[in-house]
Amino acid sequence: MKDETIIKNLKTIMNRRGISQRELANMIGKDETVISRWFAGKVGISTSSIKLLETVLGEKILIESDKKRALITGVTGQDGSYLSEFLIEKGYDVHGIIRRSSVDFRERIAHLEGHPQFHLHYGDLGDSMSLVKVIGMVRPDEIYNLAAQSHVQVSFDSPEFTADIDATGVLRVLEAVRACGLEKTCRIYQASTSELYGKVEEVPQNENTPFHPYSPYAVAKLYGFWIVKEYREAYNMFCCSGILFNHESERRGETFVTRKITLAAARIAQGMQDCLYLGNLSSLRDWGYAKDYVECMWLILQNKIPEDFVIATGVQHSVREFAYYAFKHVGIELEFRGEGLREVGVCVKVRGNVSKDLVGKELIRVSEDFYRPTDVVNLWGDPTKAKAKLGWNPSKTSFEELVKLMVESDMAKVASEGVAAKVRTNLAEYLEKGIVK
Ligand code: NAP
Ligand code: G4F
Image (cartoon, rainbow, N blue to C red; front, side, top):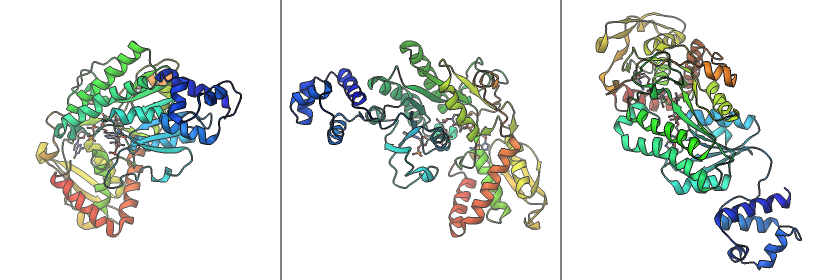
């Protein structure tokens, strides 16, 4: 790292924060002439002085490589973990923001901890100071704002928290970037959602389809969408939203419908659960693979101009169909009988190691506990723009492949859990009873 670059970084920070040479000298307990000599290039700046300066300023002046730096909020989540892997592979230095928790829920990124290109910082989207501190320290080239209270049903139970993180949290990130003087250099991706279309006004949905949010989650995310657009136009910032349709994976949270189904199918096939309780089986979704979707987040920030994009597969299926295929993959053929709350999924055939005792049993039942006060029932995305402008391939992983890879992963997980499986079975029972939605 050349001294000139360090001095340039130092001067930028001093100008932005209005710190004079004399004040800086006082802050680090040195004579002002030392600073003048550094600035004139007469003496080199030692490693210990760099460390001291970084500590008192709370910002980095030594940027150790010319690697691009990305900051990911929501790094512990499904998408955050895949995006970290993707960016590390691309050669980025990846910084993630994590929240303090009384138990360690970092299993999705455990394999990355200790990687030389992977760094974690404490922060919270509800805490502006922490965002300014981390953004000022990392000075990222790209920010991916993935952090959110992301469960739609939970947003009815915790609407205020959802609004604080999913709406105001976006504003906090944008303002922190401005406060750190990075608005001209830092590109920002906002994790927007197909839930904005909510009570849909047309199918399939594209970038011009009117929004009609239909949950506290979607209303909060709509604010996030509009504030990003506002900062793009008002301050000329490179900030964009990816309007992503549902994307799933082996790492999907266990209370989203796809993962709830694949885990239950694996447990039922291995004799560890009797029945799966679900809500609206007729709800339609455009489900893609999360690993394919994180590539698009990156492509959106590599685009020449900041624009919003719909990311979807263009193929739609019902919850019922997802369940049918998931159970089929574990060796259980289901037939759905009845309607509404009385609809059941009955086992009509088994194959492989699955017990024949299951034949004739109701393995899926409907419970009102999983109905939402207002439900979004017809999501179907049109990825034409992303295909044309970003060159993104929406058909990389088919629906059938997605179901298969999730089921196979859960079959292996359930089989290997041993004693722990009993604990997880309890969770499954809670899920059945509607205690954990
Ligand atoms: P996820 O698995 O639920 O992850 C959410 C992440 O946000 C977690 O890392 C969580 O941290 C973090 N977080 C929550 N509250 C926070 C706070 N106050 N401060 C800092 N971090 C906080 O979600 P995902 O499926 O990866 O989705 C990523 C983003 O895309 C979310 O914004 C979601 O709303 C949006 N989205 C998802 C989909 C989809 O189908 N997956 C579709 C459209 C949009 P903890 O681990 O500490 O809880
Ligand atoms: O899997 P879900 O909970 O996902 P939902 O509500 O579509 O939200 C996910 O995708 C959004 C993108 O559109 C993201 F923005 C959001 O962060 C999240 O990742 O529910 C899917 C559908 C719903 O219609 C729900 O009513 O499945 C229906 N469903 C039926 N039974 C169920 C259940 N959903 C859940 N979670 N649990 C059930 O037992």
